[in-house]
Length: 413
Image 1 (cartoon, rainbow, N blue to C red):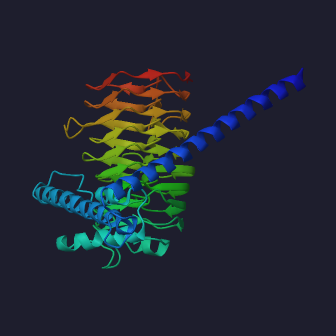
Image 2 (cartoon, one colour):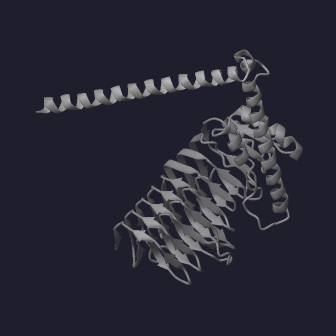
Image 3 (cartoon, rainbow, N blue to C red):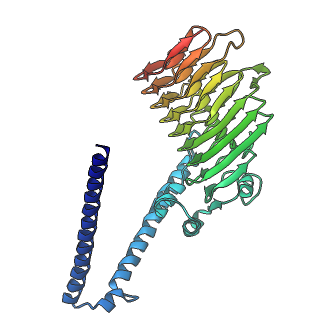
C-alpha cells in the first residue's frame, strides 16, 4: 500500500514537471515570436537592425530618454521635499523631519548601493547636503564626534556591522539626522552602561528606519533603556531587535526622586509626539523597577503604531507587551497604541514601592486620555495583586480602550 502511494506521488510529480517544461517551452516560443515581430516591424518601417542597435540607435535613445526622465523625476521630488523642509524649519513643532532617503530608495529601486549614493549626491549639491554611506563600526562611531559625520547628517548603512558597543549621540546632543539601515544588520549590540538613556542612539529626535539589530545585550544601572534608542522624540520606523536581553537594574531620578525605570525593546521612553511605526522586538525585557514594555517602557504623549512583540517581559509595576505605561500628559491627542500585537509572556514579579503589579497584555497602565485600539494579545499575563488584564492592567482617568482582543491566559497571585 505504501509503495502504491509513493508511485502515485511520483507520477503526480512527473506530470507537474512535464507541465512546467511545456510552459517554459511555450514562453520561449512566445518570446522568439515577439523578437521576430519587432524586427519585421523595424524593417517595414525602413529601419535596419544595425541602426536600431547602434550607439545612436532607437533602443539606446529610448534608454537615454528613460534615464533622463528618471533624473528629472528625482529632481522634482527633491525640490518638493526641500520646499517642505523650509516649512519644517519654520515650524518648531514639527518632530518628524523630511527624509531624502525615501527618494534615494525609489531611485535605487530597492537596496541602496554606494553607486546610488554617488549619483544621488550630485543632485543634492545644490542643497548643500549629502548622504554618507556607513560600512564599518568605526564609521558608525564617528557620527556626532567628527565634523564630517554631523549629528544631523543623512546616513545609509551599506553592509552588515559587527559588535557595536557605544551609543550614538548624547543627551545634550541628540541624533537629529536620518539613519537608514537599508536592510543590513548590526550583529551584536553590546552595551553596559551606568548612565541614563542607553541604546544604539541615546536620544533620537530625527528618523531611524530599516535598522535590524541581532543579538542585543544591554544592561544599564540606570533607568531609560531601549534597543534602538534610550528616548525617542522623532520617528523610529521598520526597525527590529532580536535575540538577547535588555535589562535595567536601576531607576530614573527626576528632581531627586525615584520615578522608576523605563525599559523597552525599541526604546525606553517615547515622548513629545514621538512615533514608533512597524517595529518588532523579540528580545527578553527585564525591568527591576517600574515601566517595562516589549516595544516601549514609557509612552508619554507619543504614538506606537503597527508594532509586534514576541519577547517575554518581566518587571515590578507597569508591565506590558507593548508598553509599560501610556499617558497623555501634554494633551496632544496623539497618545495612542494602535494595531499592535503581543505574543510574549508578560509577568509581574512583585510589588514596587508598596504597589501591586499592574500587568497588561498590551499596556500595563493606561491613563490621562491615552488610547489603546485595535490591538491583540496572545501571550499569557500573570502578576501579583488584582490589576492584571489581557489588554490593560489598569485603565483610568479618561483612558480609552476599544476594538481589542485577548486570547492569552490571565492569572494573579
